Length: 198
Image (tube, rainbow, N blue to C red):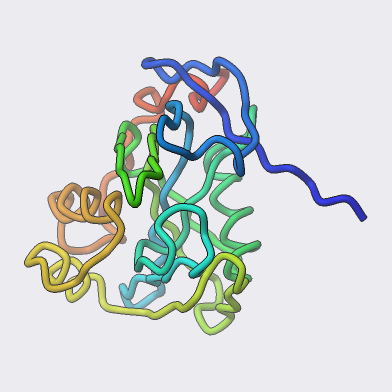
């Protein structure tokens, strides 16, 4: 059986697609701007699922971060990409998937490897929080924490997380203390390639 090559969508400064590149080849010292996403998965009690990236990941191995990150495929809705990756990496089925930070962007470097993404941020709820089954090639560990405790520990610098998560938490915290009540982001502010009809 032949392995499927995963691709990322390359974009210009406006988020319009300019092509694709193999994921395993795109990240290096001069990583081109491309599409990504981050999602924070919650349970009914307001806990967030944190994950520790697998130790052999090409970028930021072993780092604790938000629930799931990934790359939408060309023409794939970001909501669908989130659900796909949550199922593949964690065995989770998601509902109430909501866009909250449509225009988040970051660039981060670790040991010469660069991440450079237009990276909308979403929240979602796990249908069955007990069903977490990490795919060990992607996720080393996972843990549920109350959102307020997690946010406070990141904001005070007590908890070390991925660079993108560290940038996202203050923005999310500013939306209010209850993730279930965060206002929905405007889809018109998504990168052009991810906008409805885009």
